Amino acid sequence: MRTDLFDFELPDDRVALEPAHPRDDARLLVVDAGGFADRIVRDLPDLLRPGDTLIFNDTRVIRAALAGERVRGEASARVTFNLHKRVDASRWRAFARPAKRLAVGDRVRFGHDGRVCFLGTLDATITEIGSEGEVELSFSMHSAYLDEAIDALGDPPLPPYIAGKRDLCPEDAERYQTIYARREGAVAAPTAGLHFTERLFEALDARGIARLFVTLHVGAGTFLPVKVDDTAQHRMHAEWGEVSAETAEAVNRARAKGGRVIAVGTTCLRLLETAADDNGSIMPYNGETRLFITPGYRFKAVDLLVTNFHLPRSTLFMLVAAFSGLETMQRAYTHALGSGYRFYSYGDACLLQRAPGS
Image 1 (cartoon, helix red, strand yellow):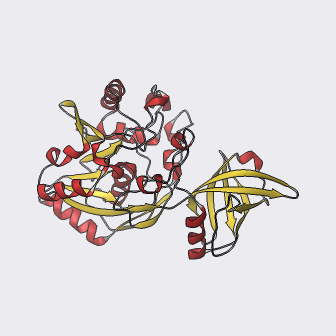
Image 2 (cartoon, rainbow, N blue to C red):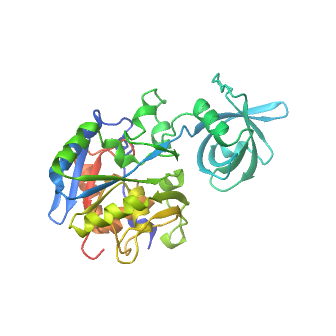
């Protein structure tokens, strides 16, 4: 499909720089066959049915934003890195800014801004230069030692749409993490889950709505805009995910009893669809997925989707257009823009019903 079909005008001031407080006070646009309804996230229990099952992504965001000093002879330059994919025990792929300051063989020193890693000095060598600012870093530490150093020296990896407009604040370490985050490995938050609170979980429990967890370690590549003219030419970054046998069995049992499956976030939806067989049953899964969903995709496992408002020409807007229909989502986003909804990671949410035939 033509990428420009998924373009729209998004004013800069509609990208949220701060989350709602409390989290479940964010606005919620309900999109279904009856049209649109303006609610808030805290209303979610009243919008679902007893016997429904919410599926959450329990990945935990690491402190993947690193500030480094490139050292080349007597010359040095400041470069920032957003880690996005682990290669092995000591190597990471990262997006560098400005990447033009780097060359293969360059040494980068981390912690020059006064932060301390008690394991010692963390250095890296640039071992590969890719396209669009991507580089490969080979670190001087490995495995758990490297993880500890990154946690000591790094910052929460806020999207550039936020980090480029305001300074990081201490509260972001907590706000850019779901309250149920458990398994470390993501370099971007599964942002639909940021709206959930213990208060909301209690209300969902009282309503008889089940709660299950899967893991997909979100990579920064998920949020990159599609730059090719034809969506068929876009290549998704691979992300690692897992659906346990216990979770798969619980989802299938709930569906057999007539309950609906609600994915909390596009990352969760992509993993469930990857793990589903042709009949819609969820199978245990452990591995990478590159699933790229555009209109025409036939959904097998998910009935409803809780998600945030996404950027123009993004794979995420293409996914919601596939789920609820391109024309429906174009009208929904026009309504959202005209009604003051806030977009992207710290923005508001919507509850989407799967379109008939999708």
